[in-house]
Structures are given as C-alpha cells and as structure tokens.
Amino acid sequence: MLYAGVGSSTHKNTQQAASEAAATALTRSGSDTADLALVFATTDHGANYGLLLRTVQATARATHVVGCSAGGILTSDGEIEGASGIAVLTVRADMFSAERFFVPQLRGRGHETGKEVAARVRPHLGADNLLVVLPDTYNFNPPAFFAGLSESVPDLPVVGGGASEDGTVGETFQLCGDTVSNDAVCGVLLSGHFHHTIGITQSCQPIGPPHTVTKSLQNLILELDGRPAFEVFAEIVPQPLREDLRRAAAFVFVGLPVDTERQHLARGEYVVRSIVGFDPRQGIVAVSDEIHEGQKMLFTLRDGNRSRDDLQLTLEAQAQAWAGPAPGFGLYFNCASRGRGLYGFPDLDISYIKQYLGDIPIIGFFTGCEIGPIQQQSILHLYSGVLVLVGEKTMH
Image (spheres, helix red, strand yellow):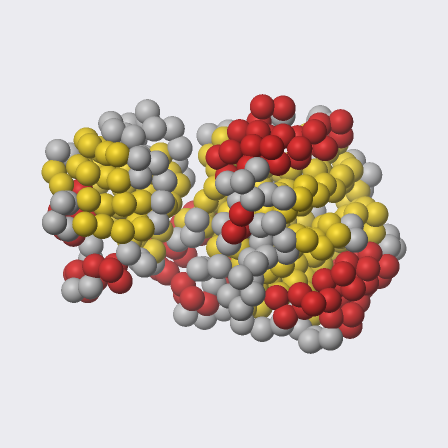
C-alpha cells in the first residue's frame, strides 16, 4: 500500500505553519506515521528552519525529513508566490523505502559531491530507483556532479530542483534530518518496487529553423550557417524586441541538443541556455554553455501561450503513459521564471496538472534550476517544469 498526502500553510509563525501543513498532509494520507516528509519553505521562515524540521518530524512522526528553501511553493491546493508558505508531503509505503542523504561543501566540489552522494545511496538501491536531489543553486556545477554520480551509479534516474530564495538573502538552504545548511546538496533515494514517470515541459519554444554552428570558441558562437551569429540572432528576434536587443536577451534563448552529434532537434530533445552577451560589430553571441562546431542549435522564445501549449502536450503524454491505478503522489519542480511571471496569473501549472491527472497529492517549489533526464542522461534544465509521478506497480 501507498499512503501519501500533502498540506500547506501560509501562517507566518513557523511552528504553527509547519504543524498545520504536516498535520494536514498526514491526515489526508490516511496513515498515522510517515516514512518520508518532504518539506519546502519560503525564505521568511529561514531563521527558524531548524524548528521547522523538528516540528514536521514530530507532527508527521516521520522517519526522514528532507527539503530546502524556496522562493515560492506549490501543492495540489495551489501555488504560493511572493508570500509566506510551507508545503509538506508525507509518504508511507510498504513497496519502497526512502533513504535521505546530505553532503556539505558543494562549492568547487561538483565531482566529489556527486561521488559522495553515489556512495551514500548505492547500498540502498533496489529493483526500481529514483534519486531526488535538492542542491544549492548558487554553488552547483551540474556536469561535474552528474559525472561523479554516474561513475558509481550509472543508470540511476535523477530528478530535482535547485533550492531557491526570494532574492533578499543571496543564499539557499538545504534541510535534512535535523541539519540546516547552505552550500550543500541533500535529497532522498526511493528504492524498491514502484512505477514512476518523468515529464519535462519548456517555457521556451523554437522560433525559426535549426541552425548549424559553423564557427565557435568555448561559449562564443561566432558563425551560424556560415554567417555572423549576431546577424542571424538579430533577424530572428520578434519585431517588438528588435528595438532593444539587450532586453531581447530576457526573452530569447538558445536550445542546444543534449547529444551534440544529433542532427534533428525535436520537441523535448533540447535544453535551454541563456544568451549572456553579444558583440554586434564582431557578430558574436555568447551563451551560458560550451558550444561545439558542427552542432545544431535553435533560438527559442519565452512565451506564456506557447509554454501553456507545451505543458498540455507534456501532461497528455504523461497521462497516457501512466498505466493502472492513479499515481500515489507527484513532485513538481517549476522554474522560478514560470508561474505568475510567465502567465500573468497564478495556479496555471497546478490547475492543468489536476485537470489531466486528477486530484493526486502534488508538492513542489519554484526552483533556481530543474533536473530531469533527456535520452537517459541527467541534465540541468532552465525555464522548465519537471513533473515526477510515483505510484504502485501493476501486478501482471
């Protein structure tokens, strides 16, 4: 059996909010204890994160409590942005177990921390596994971390989100057991016999055709299709943004293939990276990732309407892929640039998730970055939503 429930509270008193959210989650789960309590809390509770952990653990009678700071939270009850919020998911299951982990000193130690997480979770791996990671966004080196992790546990599905804040603190916090720290990575391994699916939706959709990088240097795109890269960029920018190309970089991004040899860039086969600068005179566009000559790339536009369409396609596919009884619970790692800022009003993502999947317990937060696999590779995403559904396996 799988017992899962979610609760949230907007109370400003940390102890009261934590108690309320955890008690609601436990009651809704139909169990009187929890193997795992997942908790996300906004920055204004930061001074009391230790109290928060103790309160959730005591209220939910939870073996493991794991979570992080959040710029905003979301549950099946709605999304909370720009206000105080604590979200708690409690889970008790007899077909899988939860094992929490915490690794400090993330800065400059991406590869080492990846190996340390692998060492913590490897003894607990089961027939089915899912690793949820909650790193400090500001000190996270994803390629190094994933390389270190995959050396020891090569085929482990990894999901998660970078801990976030509301912009007032300049640091994020990882919460695990009774530990509160920044510059760390924490999370939980689910292992045993269960079914899960992962859906990834993009805020940034392609504009114009794919291009071939014909000349590059590290993160600088010098030429596209044999022409100065900036020239191609300026042509493709929608008319209203052409007047101010610096402003355009807040809406136009690049889409890069996960596999640089890949010649086709279908939906869901690219990752979005920011344009970090350009030199119109020399025709250069600089992006936030390494670029290789000969690879394909797209320009993409961050747009609420097209983002909503992509979310619907992702949810349709995920709903169809889910066989058997309804999922027991869901985790949703939603980019901080989505939500109200993208659509102009709150609750769009969570409303669509409920419309397609029913009223299942969902917990998530507005992230500094998102983590989910493309073509079996663990990848860092930006401007995306990663939805993970977990449930019982159907017996044949």
